[in-house]
Length: 362
Image 1 (tube, rainbow, N blue to C red):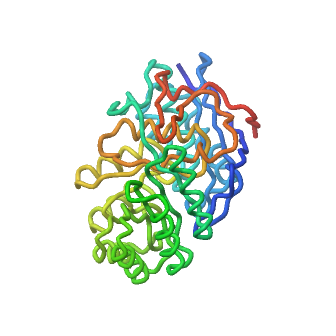
Image 2: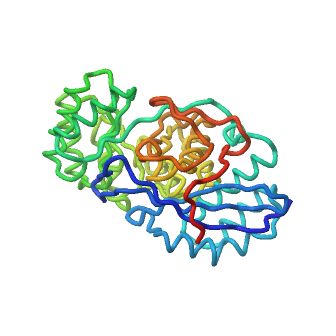
């Protein structure tokens, strides 16, 4: 079975409410959706979320990388020669991780469909479902409290609170949320590179002294500042999660070798897809470091791929895969199902994705 065509399109999905972080404010998810098609009519679906402030990838850049660099390498290859396909994908261009992730996801979907196997079982099948947190956007303390209470009422026992815009105000935000939701709810913080190293240490220590029981703090300092990340990790009791600092296996190796973070966040758009996510996961496991599976603001295709990998691997002990829940509508037919904070994996081959409503070919 040969790959005969790669089609690229886009889909725009409005959010239920604006998504606000220290880096950006977003009102809609704008996914690039890829279809890898074989001569026997089997289709693999993949997607990419343009996130220029993190990956550097825009919609135009993703489309151009797929058309100009990746598609010419992939078309004509055997669809079930997965390792050979991944080598061709890796060698098609440097960087361009979101474009690579879209095609990587589509190739794994295709492989699973050809062999009649759900991708989460292909990678190991450790679990059949994943529990996710829900993100609370950075706003006034009062608005964040309201959002947190709504999340808990909807069945979420883990909240990821966006901070990083103002350290003093961040403390008030977190304190207000903790008082509102009580001690049983897990609170994770995501500073999105918003603090300086010493500022991060002061802020996290004050939260520790206040007894706010923060489970972890995600990427407190600039992505390129690995020494600063290590400084924070070494000087607080709270676990530090590396996110933007980890774009691929080489970054993960450096952070693990330095012991610059306590945990590693894997995101398919940063890693370049599942093939490299597997390398990151195994590197971390070898060093005794657990992983979280994260996501960008993306459609259910990307969330299904990420959840499939998270379910498959024992060393992925946390998940931040709430993006599809934040969307006002779901154009993806098939894929994962949601039951409050539980993500249920499809038993259909591949990722179980059948089609995407509103997909506009480019």
